[in-house]
Length: 333
Image (spheres, one colour):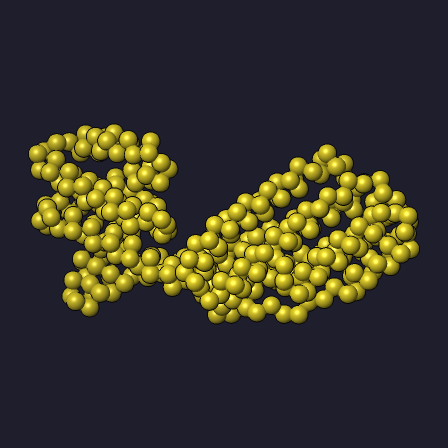
C-alpha cells in the first residue's frame, strides 16, 4: 500500500507541490516571520505557470530568466503606480511588451502569464514594504523553487522513466487486446486498421520518450539503469511481436468456423495483456516481477495448429504467442 502512495505519479506530484509550498511557511512560522513565509509561498504559483517545474538542459538559465521577469514586472508595476499611472494602462503595457516572448518558443510563452501574475501579486504589496523587498521575495522564491525541484528530481531521478515505461506496458496491453478482439470478431480490416494504427503510434511515441529518458539516466551511472534498460528492451521486443500483421481474414474465419480458435486466441491475448499490466505496476511501484507461465494457453494453440495444419492462421498464432510468452517468462529481450 505504501508503495502505491509514494510512487503513484499524481500523489508524488502532489507531495512535491505541497512541500515546496509548506516548507517556506513552516520556516517563517519558526522564525516569527509568518507573513514573509506566506508571501514566499506565492512565488511557486508563478513558477508553475511559467513551466519551471521540470529540470532540463537549460533549467537554471530559465530560472534566471523567470526570476528576472518576475522581479522586473514587480519593479515596473511599483514605479508606475508611484507615478499615478492608471492600472489598466500598466497591465496593458506589460502584456504588449511580454507578448514578444511568445514568438521565441512555447516555453518562453508561458512566462507571459506568470510575469503578469507576479505583477498582480505586487499590487497588494506596493506601499506596504520597501520597493526592493518584493523583488527579493521573487528572486529568492524562484531560486528556492528551482533548487527544491532539482533536488527532488535528483532524489527520484529514475521515477519519470518508470512512469513512462509503465505507460508503455499498459499501452501495449491495450493494443494487444484491441488487435485480437478485432481479429476474432471478423470486422472489416479497412475499419479496424485505423484505430490499431493509432494505438501502435502511441506505443512508438512512448518508446521514443523512454529512449530519451534512458539516455539522460545513463549519464548518472544509476544502479537500477541495467534493470530499467532490460525492461525497455523487452518492451521494444514485445511491441515488435504484437504489431506483426496478419492479413488473412478469410483464413481466420475458416479456422474459427472449424474449431474453438476464437476463444483460445482471445484467451491468449487477454493473458498477455493482463501480464503486461502487472509488469506495468511492478515497474512503477519498484516491485520485483513474479513467475509467469502460459503453458496451458500455448498448449491449446498448439493443439489447434496440429488439428488444422492446412490453415496458416493456427501456425502463425502458435508461433506468435510462443515468442511473446518466452519474452514474458524469461524477462529478457
